[in-house]
Length: 248
Image (cartoon, rainbow, N blue to C red; front, side, top):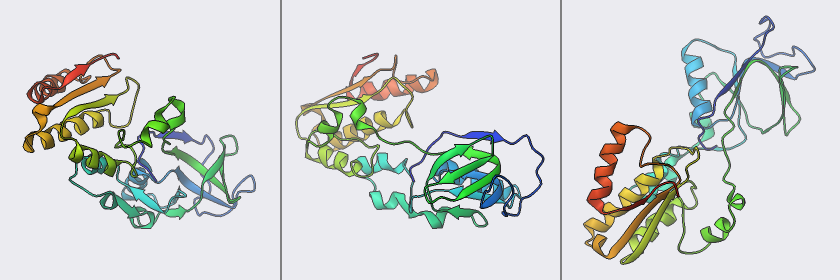
């Protein structure tokens, strides 16, 4: 499961009667005090905190057999880590005492306080936490999927493509390198910048930076939304000679 920062909590207004995991209402096969949908970083973190707080009846619904620590993919793209170092068996990261339901949620019924899985299981809850993750939808940007299939474009937001970033950085000896970031919300908004800085550092150490024109284009209005960070990052941009394009 990929990481996700989206957390939505739905509380039942009914009194908590049963926290044993047995049938409670609506024909649900099981019932839990808390059901967490998604076993990425957010879901696992919530589960761990609930267990540390002493809550025993927690279930986590996650179909993936592997958990990815996505922040490491920036370092994969920079050539400092391998993708397999970001991957762990999902079973190894699910907190002890949390019931892992290895299935996909296909239906939410907040009125009945129940989720239904692809396998047909109905799981009741008193508290529901949604951390389902996100999917890369290349087709929503015309030409993007085709670009990713070429030897000239890549992204660090995919475990399949992050190693390609490192390879492109190593191979480029002269020419132009374009790094981009959207102006809309994105996971780890600083990640595209980090990719640019790591690449520039590599080219500088290899004595090639002067031969490469580096551009960082973003739909945002500035290098970073926090002024204290923006001033520091502006100095980094100047040090590497990066051409910045804002609101583009």
